[in-house]
Length: 129
Length: 504
Image 1 (cartoon, rainbow over the protein chains, first blue to last red):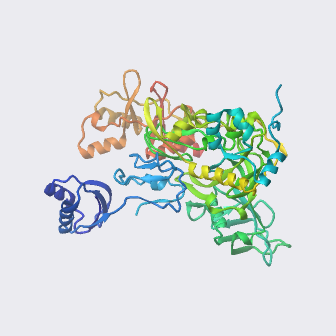
Image 2: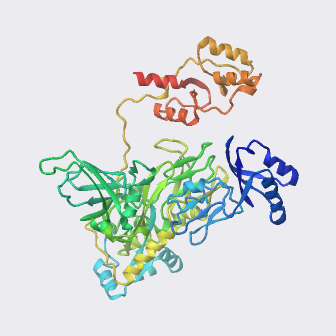
Image 3: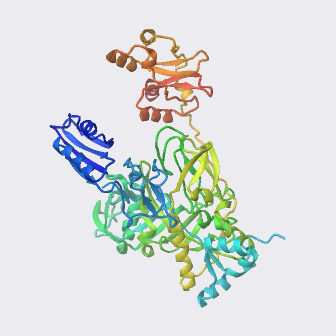
C-alpha cells in the first residue's frame, strides 16, 4: 500500500520512518519526498495490508506524522486519452501497456510514481492524484 | 510495356463514383485489404475492391489555420495579433491571420499553443483575440481586445504545409540522461524506442508510387472533408518520406480529430486525423495498398546525438515496432508509438462508412505529386566557431599516480580550474577541478581516487560552440576536456573560452 505522509516542523527532523521500520521490520520504500525544516510530504510504499498496515499507520500517527492511503498513483483520463502510446515505453518499469485495441492500461502494482508518464502524455490525460 | 503513373486500367474514378452513389462500391480498410490479399492473392482481390481507405492520427507540427476575423468598427489593420495569448502570423491583410500549431502562449509557454487554440476553436469555445496596429488613415484603430468563436469567423481554413509523413524514423537515446524530444520521452541507455506513422494504414505508404494521391484529392481531414493541395514540405517520396500539404474547412471538423498537444520540453503541436481513399485504379496501386506491416521498415536513430545526421542503430519493421520490442546492441528494448493506431483504424473505418453510405465521392487529382524530390539541407555559409577554434590546446594534465597536493600546485601554477587526469597513452581517465579540491579540503579527503570525477563530460573538436555551451549548462559545469576518437585529450574548452567569443 502506498501512503502519503504529512510532516510538520516539529517532527520533520525525527527519524520517523527508520523507527517504524525497526519496530515493525517492514521495509518501507520512499517513492517521493518533498520536505524541508518546515515540514512537508512524502510518499512511501509499505508492503503490508490489513492489520499490519494499520499498525504501521498507528506508529506514524504516534510520531505526529499523519498518513493517507493513496488509492492510485497515476490516473488516466480516458475522456482525454488519444491512445497514442507516448506514456508506454517511456515508463521505466513497464507499468503501462497497450491492449489489442491500443488502449493504455496501468498496472498499479508496478508503478513507482516517477511521473515520467505524466509529462510524456501530450494531451495531459495522465495525472498524479 | 510500362503504363503511365495514374493509369486507370482496372477502373476509372467515374466508375467508382457511380458505384458509391448506388451503394455498390466495394470499400475496405487498408488493414482488411492486407488480410484479403494474403488470403486470396493480389489479382483476385484487386479485381473486386474499388477503394482502400487509410488513416493516420499523429502529431503534425506543420499545421495551422488561416482565419479571417471580419472588420471591427472603427476598423483595424492588425500588425500583431494573439489568440489566447498565442501569437498568430500577421504578415497578411488587415484582419487575416495564420495561427500555427507550434506557436506557444506568451504566458503559459509549453502548456498551451496554437494547436490548443485550433482545438478550442473547433470545440466552439470562446477564444480571446488581442491585436495591435500602428493606425492608418483607412484603418484608424490601434488596438483591439475581444473574444471570438469559430462561427463568427468569415473563413477558418486549416492549411497544413506538411502532414501525413509516409513513414518516420524510430528514436532511441544512447546518452545517460532522459531526453525530451519531438519523438517523446527517451529513456537513457537505449531504455526505449518511440516511433511514429501508421504503418500499413499510412495514406502515403499505401500509395507509395503516388498513382492516385495528387492535387485536389478529396480526403478525410480532422473529421471533416478536405483536400490535398500539393506535395508537403520536405516531400521525399523516393525514400518513403513523402508528405502532403492539405487544406479543409475548420468549421466542418471535429475536436476529436484535432487535438492540441504538448511534447514535454519540446513544444506544442497538433494531432491531426488524416484519412485518404486509395482507388484501386491499377495493379501497382493495389500492390502498394497491400503492403503489410512486416514489409514496411524504418531506421532506428540515436537522438542522443544532437546532429542533423543521427547515427542509425538498426532497422525495424512496423510489425516489430507495433509488437512492442526491438533488439538494440543485442538487448531487447521496449517500443511504443507516438501516433494513435486506435484513431488511425477508426479514421479508415469512418472513411469507409462515408463511401458505403454514399456521402463521400472520389476526386481525380488535377495533377499527380512528384514521385522524386530531393530533401536538401540548409548550408551555413557564415563562419561559425567550432570547438577546435576556441579550445585551449596546451592542457595542464596530471597522472592517476599524482597526489592531490601536486594537482593543487598545478592549478595554482597555471591558473586553471580543470585538470584532466590521463594515463600513459594520454587517454582520459578522470578530471579534478579547483572546486573538487576545495571540497576535499572541507571533507578531509586525501587521495586522488576520492576526489576525481571518473565519468567525464567531454567535447569533440568538430562540435559547434552552441552545442558545447548547451552541454556545459546542462551538466552545470564550467569546462570539458576535448577528446579524439581514442579518448585522447587534445584540448580543453571552458566557459571562459566561450565568454571570449561574446567579447569578439
